[in-house]
Image (cartoon, rainbow, N blue to C red; front, top):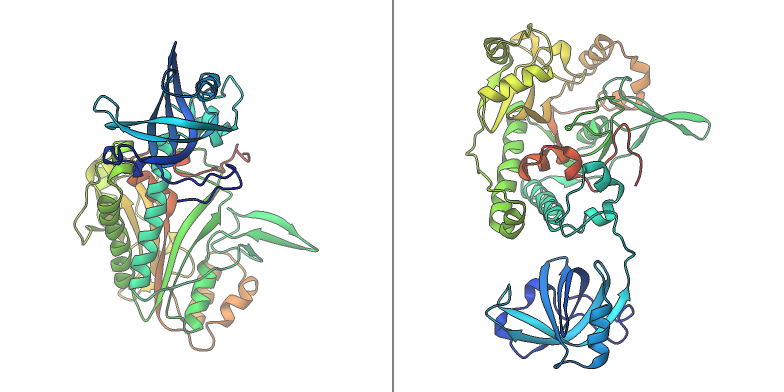
Length: 442
């Protein structure tokens, strides 16, 4: 219960809407929220009040309330912010088996009319209109449910990683050089120097392995200057990153499996209301997830009539073809080394390959990871192979000179993971204030 004495005079909110039950018949309560809808029927006013947890019906019969309360009730408009003190009245005909008859109403703020969009969802709006007025769009119950699920998703991810011995860290987002190359960087002016927005915490995670942290994770923003204008790409995203010492690619995949599987179990157990609101039935996939080698992927894609040569990364057409063949989560392993980042460890049995993996969901990549190259000389070779300059990675490379353990890790896109959880077709639905090639406000 919130203390809102300052904003509501001497009142203190006693309940959210979902905490009130018909069994509370006769009890006095104080609630606060927005007028979701209002009907004025002569001597009777019906208000549906919306707060963070749901809806509640307020009934204002002229003959049972004071003239002041009735007049205030009649004056209200949609999306006005109000506080109500009243009594719970059990009523089998009411939507939840009860209603509230107010003894006092406080108008805390009035909303202008007409509204830019309809939070009650009776009148649809296109996504650009919704994002332009995101503060109103976020009042919609389905959208709020999506972000409550996102909050619980992040809680579960943290809990799994804590349980597996990881330490949460925060690394810089202003960096002096690229993580994986210079083609996807946002350059910025940093006093007298040039700097960049970080593509990923990859280099810092690895440096922490040299520091002896053993297992770390970070949940934070990453920035990619990709020019893609699709439903799957953003230029600012939230990444869930982990790195683990004395581990290989198999250990990293097992940890990633646990994170994903435990999250789905957690949401299914603790978020039934939110899942019902957005109309999603989570299909809890058994672990371990299937694993396809890159060679198998090439064969599958070509069998679907999409041309793919060995050594190519997955095109969008190839991803769609693979998604038609595979259902649910699955790993792609044994990637060609030439198309993976410089810090990826080569496969000792076949130098054309490396110990990298992607986690896919049908046709959507949600995570990339690998066992890392922890040997200094081989790492420098990898930097040169990518046509990068080793001197630009001086601080990073120093960490490999003085005792770097074998290590592995991955990055999981939180926003794409939410697309899967919430069954959303557009990644912008899963981000409060998305940043893409066209959108920098609100």
